[in-house]
Length: 249
Image (cartoon, rainbow, N blue to C red):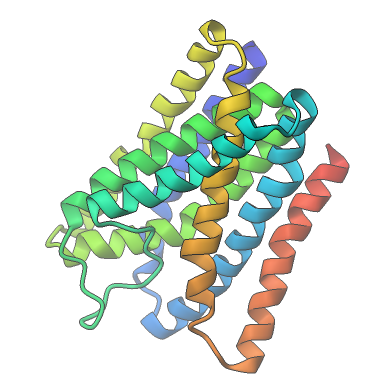
C-alpha cells in the first residue's frame, strides 16, 4: 500500500504542476499557439481512448468480468461528465480566449475545474490500486489532457478580469483538488471492497466522454487535408504510446 500512496501522490503532484505551464504560453503568438494546441488535443484524444480501452477496461474486465454492472458504471462516467458540464455551464475549453470566443463564467470555471481535478485524482488513485503500470499510463493520459485544458483555463481567467499572477495562482490551487481525489480513493478502498470495480469503469466512461465529446469535435473544425493528416498522426501517436506502455508493463 505504501507503493500505491507514493506513486499516486507523485503522479498528482506532476498533474498539479501542469497548471503552471500555461504561463509559458503567453509570449507565443496566438496563431502559432493554436496550431500547437490542436496537435496536443489530437495526441490527448488518442492517449485518453488508448488508456481507456487498452489499460483500464481490460484490467477491470479481467478482475470483475464484463457484466451489466460494469457497463452501467461506464455509462455513469459518461453521464456524470455530461451533467457536470450542463449544470455549471462549463466545458473543457481548448480554445484561446479571443473577442469572438468570450468566457463570462470565470468563477464557475474554477468550480468546474475543481470537480474535474478531484475526479482526475480519484481516477489516478484507483488506477494505481489496480497496478503501477496502469497508474502510470493513466497519469500520462491525464497529463496530456491537462496541458491544453490548463492553457485554455488560463485564458478564461485572464478574460474574466484576473491578473496573470492571480490566474496562475488560482489555477494551481484548483489543481490541488486532485490530491483530495487520490487520498479519497485510497482511503475508501480500505473500507469499501471492490471500489476499483466502480471507479475504474467510471473513469473509462469519463475518458470516452472527454475524448469523444470535447476533444474530437475540436479536431473536426480543421478541414485542411494536410493538417488533418497531421492531427490523425498525433492521435495515432497517443494510442501508440498507450500500446507501448502496455507492452512494457
